[in-house]
Length: 169
Image 1 (tube, rainbow, N blue to C red):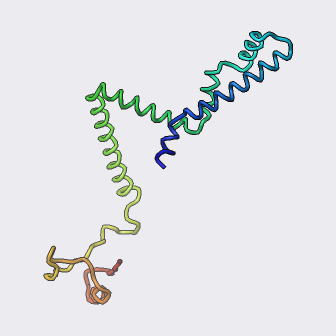
Image 2 (image 1 turned 30 degrees about the vertical axis):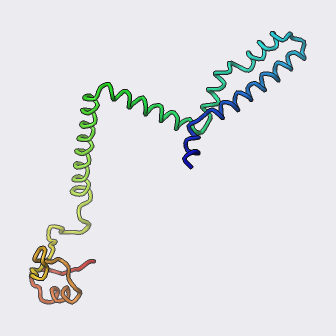
Image 3 (image 1 turned 90 degrees about the vertical axis):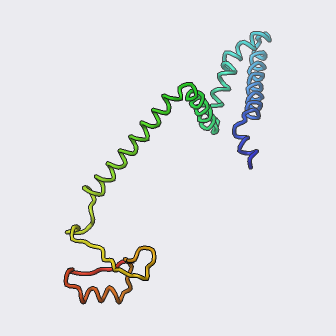
């Protein structure tokens, strides 16, 4: 598996096949021109003119290779890492400024979104309360917010301070 992944980054086989194919087409064009009566050198020059520069053709075909975006990303990342090594303080300040900006934007968005745009989805949300009962059996806090169904029913029947009591779980 690892060999296959690393094989994506090696273009030697692709380049060898491409060289062979370009050489084949060049030889075919030379043969066609020689059959038309040109000398060996004229046929070669004419074939090269018609086919184009081999290096440019290789680059064009290499761009069509599906691994090219990955290779470009690796090359660009390596360049970015090398560039960051030359100006460490500047990069640190840029990263800190970005982090602070993202943090502030997130906080402001959260406050605006939850507080102003989408408050609680019911009327009179300021009248909501959470009931808690002091319970000495709960060692960690001394109180609890969880209730059984019969306790919720008792709160509903006996409570005079609330319009209604609702449990969820």
